Figure: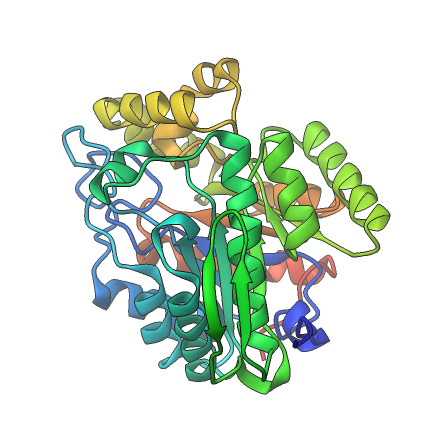
Length: 375
């Protein structure tokens, strides 16, 4: 029997000493994270994804995180209806970048773990150790219906996810054949090569936000990706997560997500937010998204879903950073001070808006000692 491969500091640090890791979120899908009808909304094309990855790589952005999406949310734009499968997407981008870490997002119940483990190792070799796994245990029944799959009860999803992940980790580390015979899997003489790159394993992330989901992430993963509703509750979540991990004799990091609207003046930023997220919101898609979250996910309360409705058109319910470069830098500094390891965010159009963020916000974070200059 093999042992769980270690995480080297190189992987844990995502190749740098940045105090707050920054990631670009959701670019593998049409419209990204903004349910809007504005004509400049994100295309999601391969050409635009590749250009964005190379811009991020050159700027020292730490990672890119895709959405695992199999169908759109309808509305006038069929929000996120055009999306790239995330492991193939990640592998292609890893082959054409140098430092950027790139995650794949995988629904465990929809992919066999032996196939998945080899797929992940392949991507990791292409990227020379820069691949990360974002594991999803399931929430969107519309998508499961496409596969002819019925979701398990909420808590049982994570029991399955643990069994699935145990097989993947064992395939990554074991040089010997092994059998599996449990509630979910019955396998004989299981073995797989190559192992992940460099004798360590990929960083594993999970976005479960319910109590059961958070416990799963703390116990089984390296990074918890969680909704950031406000800084006070976020800081409390970070403290509690780290304390619980210490009880389990391990460490865990916490990342939040949101969206950025950064302009030279506060008025310009607020005006553009209203323009794309209110005047031109794709409310049909937003309502479908809210309905699905209310029915099949426990990441948000119903009160949060309704209270922050405009956050869902602006950035899929994420935390808003809206304003001047100073204001956006202040917001990121506050997230860092709340104990967050990383923050993953989107723009309406990543390529159009990222250069201003790169040139104006990143230097402000470097001046505060939160980030290091790109190498």
